[in-house]
Image (tube, rainbow, N blue to C red; front, side, top):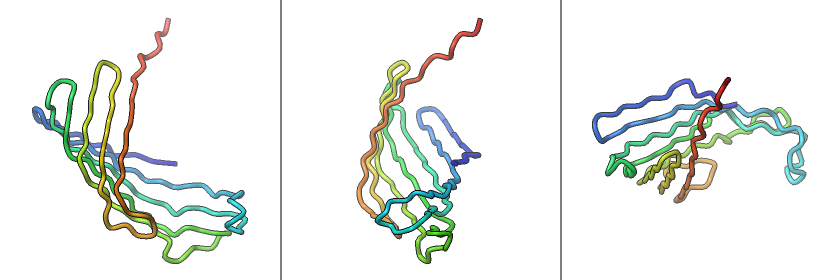
Length: 139
């Protein structure tokens, strides 16, 4: 379950600022991988967000800065027992580009991660393709 109650947008002229804030809670997995030698596992709850400040170079192109953060706010559980020092966190920041043509949009971001705890840290490249469909006609 991901709850996203807050979405912000700020847009003066050619610069746009946007962000999304989320709360994530995962259900218990009663059939984990056998290598874990556990009957159930459940990741801790987390808050995460992503932010972007792109500049409109043209009607189709935007370039700017993008970032995200993740902070786990409760410990993982194995067989119902809290796992000490299991909370993850990370921050990623870097350049981004967006190309939009009609109903199609392509996003590309390069993130340099820092402040990672209980997870890997490095450089992330993300590509995302979005195709907007027209709403169905109701007769």
